[in-house]
View 1 (cartoon, rainbow over the protein chains, first blue to last red):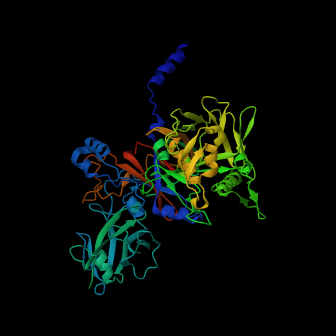
View 2 (view 1 turned 90 degrees about the vertical axis):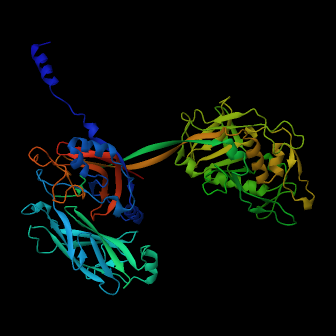
View 3 (view 1 turned 45 degrees about the vertical axis):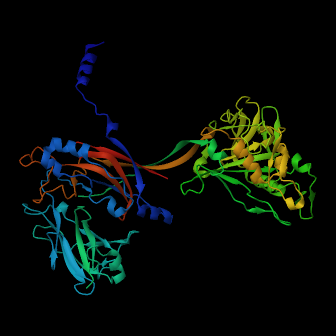
Length: 251
Length: 386
């Protein structure tokens, strides 16, 4: 064997090869109710275009509590993964985000304000006849930063709510109503921004004409005159989510 | 910034695969009257009291009255018009082509009709006769037992060379007191579709396998329509013909027909109702407690779409999970003071497939959280089966 070849082999020994297939994970997917509905239409509406990874089950406070090494291990080994849900509204609550800046330390979150709303406890109270409409503002905020990175600013938001009890007056009909009677509205952000440059969304939320029979069915056990429902707002680009409770009284 | 990533043209592939399931049907399911359902839709006309009978019986995997019971197969019998059992009865044929038999026979027209129905669907001609053959001889099947497996078990096809049926070809040798309902001679015979992979036959009704006696593979007993999931057994080759049988059967007693039957299997085929015949074959020729009576493997064709979700190193390293940042908007996975060296990371627990309007169409879950960071390029292969 020529000495040159021996040298080449010695050099090769220093090279580490990563086995590519260890990074390939094979998953079985289940159709959501929306997927089944589109498939049943037989009109080509079932068309997968894009994907989004999610991390609903993960509790990242474990990293803070136990440090990066042990925290990661705890998440990997101790996090029970729920089964895939066919209800599209519940399947992926929190999605991962791609940002070109790899050095971010802070991320914006969503807050909401409005007339007589409890922002701290994320609660809105309204009635069927009095106070039946509230104007709410959802804003992107970030603390200890001078401004929100341009890439992190949402241009539109999706607002999801129960189509049985709530609506957005003035907006067109919901963009989508699923089989669970969850209505989705796609709303464009306000023209003006927050002081930090974040996006704002102002919209009105109104209760529908809820009958006493509905209160008897959907009212809370402790007080049948109050129906509790949840509204979810998330940024289309950032994926940032805020979910708040709406209590509707029979007044 | 994005929460979605579009699939590229090379990221979506379709594939076809096959799933085999082993089906094992135990004897008690066939022999027990609780798991064998009758549909007594046939009623004799004219003088009463008449005879009622099913045109077929359905074998279930448990008590058929239970909601959880699954139908395994339908079982019935039929004759060709050229059968000696028909010819010997000298039926008259009226101007409409209807066969008229003597009152000592029962359901002869229905047995002919069932054979014709099967022939039409499986052979393409109601007047054609089923045949079974070995290398040298073609044997017509004049009297047939039809076993039609339900789709739940036969699925898209019965796999060749996996079929076996074990039964008692002979009736009980002790006719005293009647052996019509007694468990048959314990000597069993096993039928298989051995060599059907090398003798692939096609008919109007799809692919067929020849079912032979496992002890003598040159002795064909029936044909198995593997696409249809229908087994056609030749009664004259499968069962003993001359053993004495006796017992009580349904008969139109008001016409003087004796319900006390004495004769052979052939005469039972003529004199008995379909219920009587199926009852006898099912309850006495499939003996044993929980032994296998019929087994085969089915084939399910699975069409899959494979989505290759490629997460490159610099993608999806942040999260919208509310625990990802603290009240100070700070990313929790980066330690304070370590911002220069530590990069953010996330864990993946699900992958959603979306359409252009952001509708979630399908969801896939991982078995444990998968770490994603700037050093990892992950490809998640998501399979959607149809």
